[in-house]
Length: 237
Image (tube, rainbow, N blue to C red; front, side, top):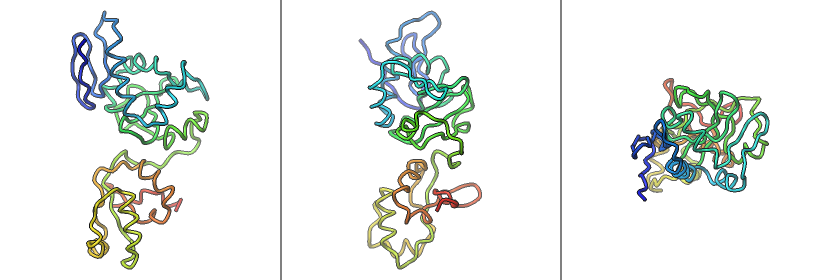
């Protein structure tokens, strides 16, 4: 039996099965074969965070809480193909639904839970409802009363404002961001602030990491059309 290749972000075809950009299989009219769709969704699930994968393996039926239906594994292929998620939200998996609103995980190993109206325009319509699946599960799948910080999914991140005599803070930023700046370059980097530290960083992952690195919150910023802004909200420093 042939197994079609899955490539997030590109549409590929396999017989009467059409794969959307996120690798979700969409059956052609009159084709009731579900195996390719299941295989595609299984591969997408494998790219989500581990907390979601553990929860998904522990349930046999959809779970309804706070008016939200969180899908079991068996429901995922039908829900994602019905709403053509791969066509308009590349690289995401719809994991739950409340009426005409879907809830999504990005298939890159982690990050927040997003919501958007079904059939929206893509990432521009996404709203963060929880910093991660574990947090959402812990809340009983509650929907937030206060909005999460309004951050883009990714952006270039800069270091700025670290005092030139606080090289230890730059060392902590180096570890947090996973960079390989030579320690011998620290003096030059501190003198050159603001400097580009990471391209297309996943801001919600960085925001989550800053929960345990409060000393770095004032110094990590991301690029916007209006200049640099701190990743951590300034009113929460």
